[in-house]
Image (cartoon, rainbow over all chains, first blue to last red):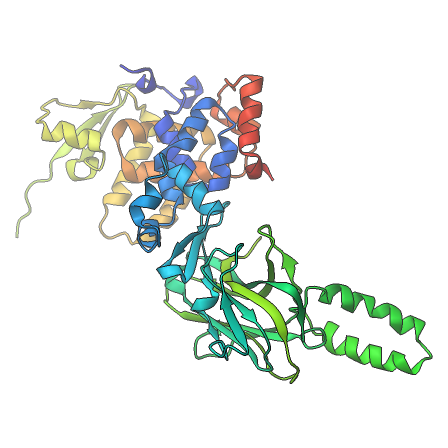
Length: 305
Length: 152
């Protein structure tokens, strides 16, 4: 009889659990826990590396998604000797799907699905008018093209995703992923409005700043208030500052991939219904001309805890 | 309509206690199912790796799961109560479920085990599983470094 299956009167004999059982238990934890617990013993590590575990951590429809890859199913899967390798590759290397319109990746700690909708996949009002928007390749972009804002008054961008694509039981957050070549103008005192909601219904709005220096600028404006306390200019500074800084709830942040992102809103996916979620970003009230934003897309990923 | 007589099996634990179980219930354990299908004609089926304490629990679980009148919600409630056992017993049931090849029990017990492991440090897991750390110092350091992100 194998050592693994020797008689055990009670667990007080301290019979070690076979590796297969450890793997089953680990597959019910999380990617993060499985990796953490590989430090317990070499047997735990071996169990934690097994395909049985990582097959469970990969999303159930991962094969279907990889089928949509522009590089082809076999080309993606052929590179990986194990499901664990595939998992970590998908975390750090988004794959381009749907003819270059979207990218797909995984959230490392949980294995939940993340997507970025390329600028080409979005509805950009006036996007087809060459005087207003230009479509160009961009070296640091994962997609073939980015949308460069030359000049608009009416700034309106809309994206849509069906919740059936996303991981159930998850709160997702949407971000505009953008940069600029030589500065972003027209948003300094005019914040934009982001809305996230079910298509056809009123969404949740928030006021968003696209100006990368916005946070600094609004903080700095407090100082002129004091310096010019008795000066007529104080009134103007305070008004401009108040209008913008006091309403804004989101400022751009720099991402690990060096692009900027700004949070547009959140929504919960319960997995029971298939809903079209609409995400929009507009600035159409100020009437001023805006330029300089280079848009890679809208990223939808699980909200960080 | 008369129903065919339900065959009853005698399952004998490692400590020689005998339990009567309907065949239709007992075959949820693939090990037992295989024995029956292979035409095992022993009076009692000896389960050398399962003591009476565990076998009693396993039969309780098998009967709940074989009961066609219990709903999924009822099974879930049953599971929640069933796994409230000292961790040594959870491990004992996993071993038994493995030996008997009883997938439903394995899943429920491994899930309970997973819920505990998520909350424990590496050192606590070693303690609760009664296992020695057989990594060398260098090996452990290397594995920790490889998985540094999981400790953040």
